Image (cartoon, rainbow, N blue to C red; front, top):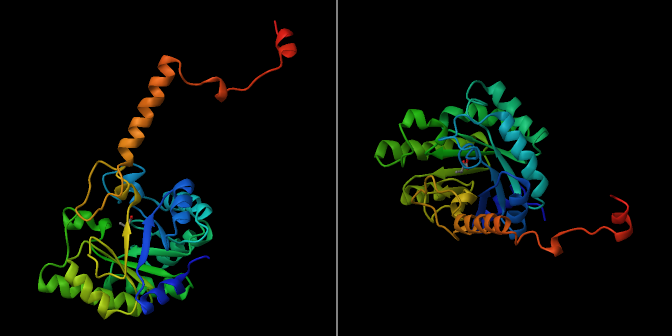
Amino acid sequence: MKKTVATFKSAKENGEKLTMLTAYDYSTAKLIDEAGVDSILVGDSLGMVMLGYEDTVSVTMEDMIHHTKAVTRGAKNALVVADMPFMSYQTSVYDAVVNAGRLLKEGRAQAVKLEGGQEFCEHIAAIVKASIPVVAHIGMTPQSINAYGGFKVQGKSVEAANKIIEDAKAVEKAGAFAVVLECVPAKLAEIISKTVSIPTIGIGAGAGCDGQVLVYQDMLGMYSDFTPKFVKKYCSLGETMTAAFKGYIEDVKNGSFPEEKHTFTIADDVLSKLY
Ligand code: KIV
């Protein structure tokens, strides 16, 4: 059955953990969906894991719509959330509503996610007012990498931790139906999860969150450029893929692929008339 924002609400009320994974294409979305995940995030992490940029800053609305369309065709049951890329909402409340609308109208996402707390509550409220569900994203927000000077854990001082607590309360008040907590101390994430009534989805935020999200290439061991401390690798698919690619190259070079069973036949009487 199709998961909705109501699934998130009832999971929090019943103390059931929520699962979210990223996906950026039809085939992977279909596999993740069939595995029974609650939600698929078309993350702007696609800039790094799919497009090879060193951060998420260069991702465009066109990139997000293109990949969201593919994911929504594959996800029959999971709630699909699409990321609002850098500069698609920071510029104005108007831009925020228009671009959130495009992710639903053109991408067919069911919800959008945007980075930022108190400073973007006006944007969140306006998007929600347009009947577009919003997931907020606070703590370490990768689109701000140039302001942070690198991907760093956030909320370690009293002031920084209090700011994140206030951010969580503010995005809840603005109407977000869930909030991603990225790279914050586990005990802080636990306090926030007990403070707000919307589900917290953690990434590098410990087990006290109401749900977890991971980038699928990280958990499958497919992205070797950088593996954050918080990632659990469930397999080494990158190694399996490389071995398969090498097997194919060897088979083609030595003539053992294709075999007869991989080929199509032609009738002898047709063949005899060809030359
Ligand atoms: O873009 C993304 O994949 C994300 C997750 C890491 C939460 O925002």
